[in-house]
Image (tube, rainbow, N blue to C red; front, side):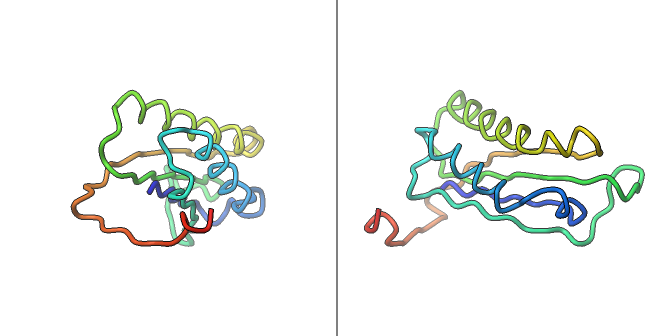
Length: 125
């Protein structure tokens, strides 16, 4: 952990390099002490079917969910959420300047007793 899940409306693909957005989120997260580098996972999922606001087909969205193990102080989580959100907002600013896009982020704690983990990434860093 942490896992960053980016959901976005398909109509943004012609203007948003989603792979680069994922990399921007990863790079920012790697600089934040509360996110252990070996645990960072960023992935994106395109929503092909969606309806936004008044139904205007130009409307788009990007929603970022952050899942991480419990135990971090509230102020640490708030600061990390703000930093990731600002990275996404800056990345999307050129698109948001000329078309309607809803950007949102939510961080959720995961109960460690209900979330077993195994992996060898740390062995290779």
